[in-house]
Image (cartoon, rainbow over all chains, first blue to last red; front, top):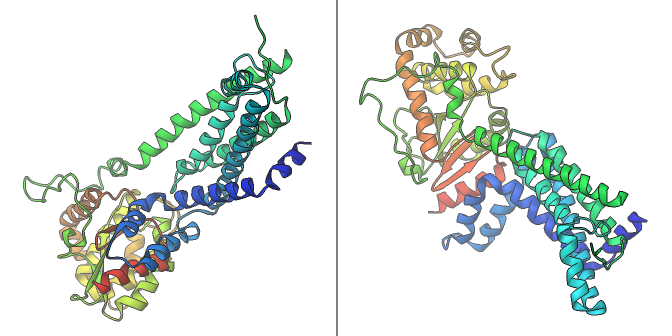
Length: 183
Length: 248
């Protein structure tokens, strides 16, 4: 069921494109991280030809094979892909929620979204804020082990991102409108 | 009800995990950005405190510019009048320096140093412990005893690299290796080590302090023109930065 929901989301071009873009951006930032100043200097320099402004940053991406251990390479690639997935699924979820606002009335829809964000008294919606935070923490672990230390955070990052994706898909399958319990 | 309990437990676990990761990340990040402290763990190997004014004080931070790098007296390969100078900070125990040596530096030497377009200046950043300090010390003596064999010796050192501060890598090991390289007078190297170790230690410490002033906190690192390149970057990236300098 969850796999069906998951594949259904990525059959839509908009979300597949978002996944790809976020993955490429996160991967590039992670690989460039130590040399972002060189990349920026090259891009903004008026003396460097346009072709070099493109080819130099691209050539620095090659450091994935020279400046990372095998474990770090795997984590950087996995975390980039998983963070892209997590962002695309979260955007899909929010898109659907905003459509609910139009269909079910502003007040109920907004309360549902806010409640799902903070997960206060709304067990059905699940903690979107927490799952989003999880994915961000998972993705930030990509920086923790650069260049040499703390590779153990890579596996935690991967686990958190997978958890985040699973929980967001679960939220998508759950009732789309929350009814808050009155005490 | 059960669903709600699961949700609350999950939030508690997630928050705890988040806190642990943030604390650990900050800890590792701060440790990584203070390589100077590594040598403080080996006080006997660090430069003995110089007499006042005997070692030039390094400014707190320097704008990255090859023109500001101290070149005089440093080991180098290539044409002394080459149009482009590359300053290279390294540690003989650093595995990424070995990788850089094999994948990138060898191509720079073949394509730019031999043609006289680039001069590579070797700057010590010996921060990985006793074996790093021992290697840096012998490197200074080898440069003084046989400058034309320095790069051959440098490559031989990377070929022998093993795990940090274990197995091969003591001064005796390095001297034994040095003996095998034709053209290096081992007696002169040993004599220089006996008489000039204190001066060499100061030079090693000064190289590292200079690198730190430019913002270098690990190896390998290079300065090409006004760019500080950190890490074992591929030849294609370094080549383009050198080409930009050659066009100036």
